[in-house]
Image (cartoon, rainbow, N blue to C red; front, side, top):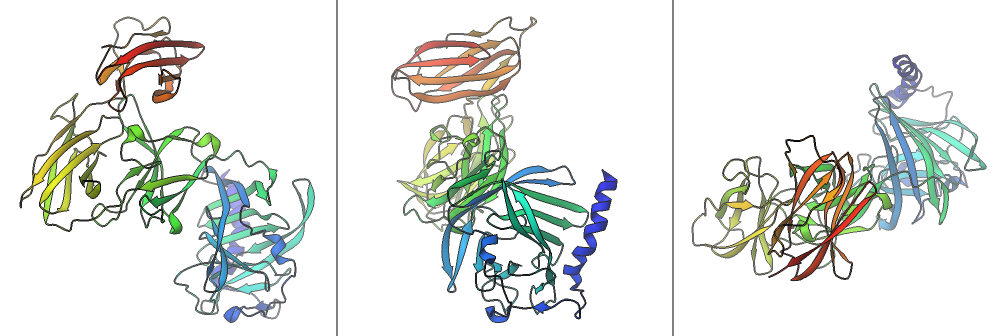
Amino acid sequence: MKKFVFLISFLVLPLACVIVSGWMSESTYKVESDFNNGTRRPGDSLAQNFFPLTVGNSWTYKSLSNTGENLYIKASVLYDTLINNTVFYRLSNELPFFRGTLISLDTSTGNLYGYRENNECSLYRKGFLLDSLGSKLGDRVLACPDNGFYGKCMDTGKVTMFGAVRKTKFFLSPAFSDSGGFNRFTEGLGITYALKIEGLHLTTAHLIGCVLNNSVLGDTTTTTHIFGTVNYEDNNLPAQGGYVKAMKLDRTNGDIIILDSVQIQTGGFYYFHSLPIDDYYIVAYPNSEEESDFVPTYYPSTINWQNAARVNTGNNPENVKVSVYRKNDSHGSFSVAGTVYSQINQYVNGIKDVNIYLKQGNIFKSFSISKLQGIYHVNNLTSGSFQIIVNRLGYVNLKQDIIINNSNLQNINFFLEPTFIKSVNSTDSGPKKFILNQNYPNPFNPVTNIRFDIPRTAFVSLKIYNVTGIETAILVSEVKSAGSYIVDFNASNLSSGVYFYKLETDGFKDTKRMVVVK
C-alpha cells in the first residue's frame, strides 16, 4: 500500500506543482484569461452540457483517501439567486473538491465560478475561478493575473457511464493554489471523478449516482445524510451563525454521544453526510452563550428533549427544519450561578451539557450550558422575576421561579432525575429467557420503572403507546448485551389514563398495561 501511495504521489505531485508555480512553456501552450469577465476564451458552445447546473439536480459520490477514510458526499442544487447581476446556484454541500456552495456557470465562456464575498482576485467580478469547461486539450486558464497560478485541460476523450458513451474533459483546477486539485467533467453528468492532493494526503471521489432533471442514474441511496435549515421561530427567517449537532443518548450511562457537528451556512442551511443509520436528536446551537440571538433548540421547535422528534438517516431526510427560539438580551449586570447534579449521586458529580434557560413570560432572556462539573453561569440579567428551565438529554427537566433584586444569585442548584436505562447487577449466571416485568409502581405519578431481561445480545425496542395505539415515547432502541435492565419512565408530559409499553427483541414480543394518575 505504501508503494502504491508513493507511486501515485510521484506521478501526480509534479502536475500539482504546475498550479503552485504556474510553470509552463509560453511557446507551447496558449494562455487564456477572463479579465473583467470578458469572453476572450474561444469557449465551447456546449460547455454547459458538462455541468447540468439546474435546481433539483443532485450528485452522490463515494470518497476514499490513503489514510483509510471512507465516506459519501451528496450535493443538491437547492435554488438559484442573483448576486451582483450574476446567477449563482446554492448547493446543499460542497462538490468534491470545490470550496464553497455558491456556484455560477458563465455559458458564454464556459467558466465555472465559486462565490467569495471578499474575492482575492479583483479582476473577477463573478467570483473565483473553479474551472473553464470551454477549454480544449492543452489550454491553460489563469486563476488570477495577480498570483500567476494556472489550471489546464489535461485530456479529453470518451467514457461509458450509466449505460451511455459520453464526452469527458479532465482538468487541473486553477482553484487549488495550495495543493493539487483535479476534476473530470463528463457531458450530461457533471463532475464524475475528483482528486485532491494535500502534502502526502491523497483523496479521490467517484460519482456513483445522480438525479438529473428528475431522472435517477446509478445509486443515490448508499449515502446516509441529514439536510435542512435553521430558521427563527417568530418570523421564519434564516438563523444567523451557529452550528447544528446530530446526537444520541447512551442509555446505559446517560452520556451524550455527538455523531457530528456542522456550521449553519448562509441562508440557514446545514448538512450532515455519512452518518450511521440511526435515530438522532438534531439540535441547533448559537456560537456563543452571550453573543447570540437564539437559544439551543431541538428539532422541530422545542427546548425539551422529551418533546423533540428524532430523525432517522435511513430515509436520507432533506427538509429537516429547526425553528429556533429567539433570545432577547436584557443587557443587565447581574447573573445567576449554580451547579446541576444527578439525584443518584447528589453533591458528588455534576452533570455537564445541561441547558439552563431564563425566561420572562414567553421571552427567552438568556441561557447557559453547564460545564464539566455541572457548573453554570447565566449572565447579562436585569432585576426582575424569571423562570429557570433546566433541561438535559436523558433527565427529567426542572423549572424554578426566581427574583433578582439588584444582586447576583449564587448556589441556585438543581438535582435532575435520570430516565436512561440502568443495568442491574445479578449474582447468578444471568437471565435464561426474555422477560418483560410489570412496571412499578403502578398506577404512578409521574415516574415508574420498567424492568426487562434478555438472555443474549440483541437489538431491543421498548416503546410507550396510548390506548389508540399511537406511539408516545421511545425508551430503548439499540443493541443491548445479555442482562437485566431497568428503565425509568417519566410521564409528566402525558395526561392521566391507560398506556401500554411494548418490548420487541430477537423474535420476542410482550406488551403490558400501566396507568398514569394525576
